[in-house]
Length: 400
Ligand code: PLP
Image (cartoon, rainbow, N blue to C red; front, side, top):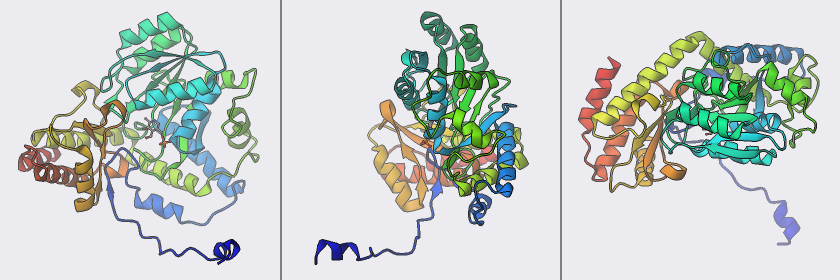
């Protein structure tokens, strides 16, 4: 057969039929059926008047979910990293000093993006698995006098929630630094009050506590942060994520910049409607309750949580892997036997922890019971010293 003839032969495929998993890993989480239905509705044009109305609704629902009045609140086309790069790439100007944390994988990604934006990166340190200490942050701010301070509110790699956010933002503002918060794994699941806490810029992902497929990722900027972006001497390096250009589409003009991922905007609208119906505070409470039951279950069977109680992130629970156990084998066994996704550790914690999500539509009692059962069963089969019945009894008590 000649090469040309080969190219005309269609590849053979089968109808799409993904396995029916329960997603209790670090994201994505299970998508709510209403969001899936919204995604199967017909497309309209990205400048259709009906779509413009829908964009307004998404922006208003995002403001509610972030706890902000920021005019500059949009879903960025792309995954959480696109919203992250939009935040960092626009706010950081060449030569700016940017202070970032070293206590997790995504602080490292912040540093890398800040460097690519032309920033000079300095770090504020804490071990992986611990939160930043406000006094250490204040010292680092005094030492480096940064233009921008970035922190990760919910570190998906370590299961650590950064508490005392207002203490960090006040200290940063004392040094005239703008504050960028990574809220990818907190938005819609963990208490977050952008305006009240003095956060200047926050970005997130839809596939965690919003239980929406990845594709349109929340971003919010204060007027002060946006003023800095609009006053830049040179444009940001990315054309696609240049907020001064995106203003034309998401601002008053509503003119073409790129073709918005319409189906993903439908999806995030429905996911945010679910947040509004439940009530943001009730949603935070649900995540705390279900994560509490999960933690009771893993501790009840004899395992240890990795983070200290005050810094535990309800949406991502890091559980210490017992000695002599291979985390990858356990995750594989759980997937194979129970169609349940959990994950192993990342970066410095690779091999040391299981990462178990408790996010959005996945954060339900039946999923907690399934997770404790499946994890316990797989560990028991691998010879670990666990008491699965005691774990399940602890879950039942916590959920009563
Ligand atoms: N920041 C944090 C804390 C995350 O957990 C993730 C993804 O897991 C990201 C940023 C990047 O998001 P994405 O993978 O959607 O690009």
